[in-house]
Amino acid sequence: MAPTARQRIWGWFFFDWASQPYNTLLLTFIFGPYINELLGDGSQAQAVWGIGIGAAGILIAISAPVLGAIADSSGTRMRWIWAFSVLYVVGSAGLWLAAPGDFNLFLVMTFFALGLIGMEFATIFTNSMLPDLGTREEIGRISGNGWAFGYLGGLAALVIMLLLFAESAETGQTLIGLSPIFGLDAEAREGTRFVGPLTALWFMVFMIPFFLYVRDPRPVKRTRLKISQALSDLGTTLRGLPKRPSLFAYLASSMFYRDALNGMYTFGGIYAAGVLGWSVVDTGIFGILAIITGALFAWLGGRADMVYGPRPVIFACILVLLGVAISLVFVSPDTVFGVPVAEGSNLPNIAFYVLGALIGAAGGALQSASRTMMVRQANPKRMTEAFGLYALAGKATSFIAPLSIGIMTAVTGSQQAGVTPLIVLFAIGLLLLFWVKPDGDRADE
Image (cartoon, rainbow, N blue to C red; front, side):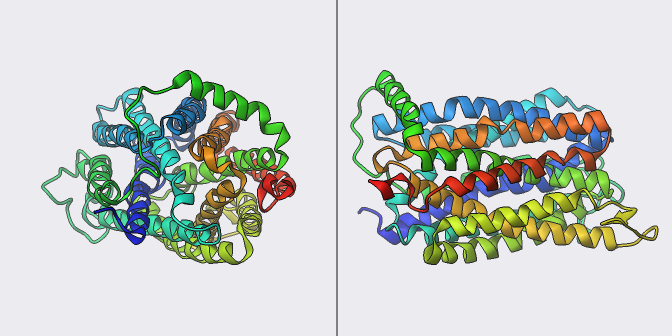
């Protein structure tokens, strides 16, 4: 029996639920701060983290549109999702090797990059399925609901990690005062290192509904991949971009603002750990707040998208994030927005919690609205290729935020000065959005 429309939508939602812990646990709130603890130098950790993720981003940028074109030409997406799911699981599970005292940074970053590549490529193919799930008016709400559901998955995984596994370096206990479960050795930081295997297990279990209920949108013929034809089609699309100014402007705009947002997510945990001296547990609590606001506003943003369209939602979210990027530079243990604070004051922590809540809220709504905007701009017959280009736009400059933050931090020796490139990236993305038409170039056809 073929899955119902409702089953297909919920199956598609479960990809967001299953994959979100890579962003929540590994990129931002647990593994990133743990790397900071291992290296013992916030500026060094931020620089290494940025360069490693930037290198993975270059590989994703080069490959994404090609794979999208091949998938559209061959008529299948599911087998690509299976393949990249394997990379996700192997890469995340390998982070168990990040043991203190015997820490091979190159090997661990290789596993991290492998899992990141798997997650990003699988996302390209699942995002391209969005227009098959509802009408033009419905997909904004569907996208928002899916993103909110994914945030809840990340929240659940983070709570489990904080309560049962991630131990404090000082006490060896979790947030609720327990030793890590399953007999994991706190001195060897096995509780915190379990974040990698937990992320892999989470993905394997919660991808089951996706593979049960989601199907390719059209019957697939078992034929050889027409790589030459796919590359030819991609070349035609790229040469035609200047003739589609709205699509061209949107890809350029999203290239900058998504890079800046990913920079915030990627460096949020390391930034808080280095600047404010937060532990993994402290950063995890901060993460819970950001995820809750992210889920709520992804859901609200989906409904605003359905009523007003994605463009106004994107505008509002970029403005909020630009304000946050500027504010980050002015929060430190000694001063908050230029006002000196007493030693031991909680005001810097409170200010950073507020900024984190804003990042979560604006980031959740922005990412949801961005993929529905891509559907409005794209050629319906080449949707996977379009999301490959969308990934290219997200990754072609994805090395700019991490590398510029890494280089700026290394040059200045200051994590606060190191995040200033985010301000420029958000401003460019906002400016380019003025040339994007709400319904794309099809409005002129």
